[in-house]
Length: 335
Ligand code: ATP
Ligand code: MG
Ligand code: FE
Image (cartoon, rainbow, N blue to C red; front, side, top):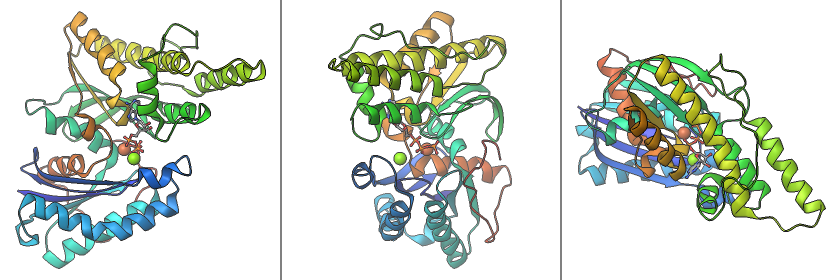
């Protein structure tokens, strides 16, 4: 079964061909980052226009790289949400056109479920159930994954997403967009104990997260230093901020794994590319006999391969969408 998958939820135009769910035949990712970087973040209108300009070319490239033609495709998939409405519309419209023209089934995929599925492409033996931590630019979820299509949200952020907090702090420090990789690199040169930023646990009864208090604390620290004309130690600020975010992510994940008596921990989303997060997760895993999974760097951030994999499991569980399928900018995990 060959799936042509299209991802356009944010600022990557991506098209992939996936064979039998877990084999990547091609995965073309055209990033708009260099354009949006000038503005310090994603400009939705520019994103939609660029998707529109690129999509047909990227579809062609994905087929070429997979060495197949449209006639070899059995199913077309696209991201239906969450994401930017105009950006999503480009992908869904292309997918509908292909479904109609080739008379093949259409499956609309939840982008956050796609992020989890990135792991199935890298770890061929990975199967649910497991505990998932999804940390991306717009979302932070702790989730119990019961099967390929059954997701139970246990915790989520009450304000900023983990990746969003990296992006906002980077911006305040004058680092480039997206901030995650910049902070990751700066932090390697700094001392994570230099500044004692707050670890917001909320309370022990909830698995929810809150990162806006930490953000405010870091912003206040930066302003304070500037007022006193003290030169900012960017590596120390990055290392200390990053440590505060990761301590909370790992502590809550560990507590949930213990409570549910689970020994598989699966990390996904753009922040899963963070080297310190991976290092801490692996240490926690080794000390507690928990197997830790995470995607390759390229499959951590947005890509169509993960959408094709998620579509496969939706499809073999009987899911089909009509040409009346809509986009859902605020779609929740599991919907
Ligand atoms: P969502 O998936 O929630 O809709 P998104 O698709 O924009 O949001 P992703 O593509 O999953 O988000 O991830 C992008 C985010 O990952 C950005 O916030 C970016 O800063 C962050 N990120 C990327 N690499 C790293 C890294 N090495 N360390 C920390 N964060 C990182
Ligand atoms: Mg992106
Ligand atoms: Fe994403």
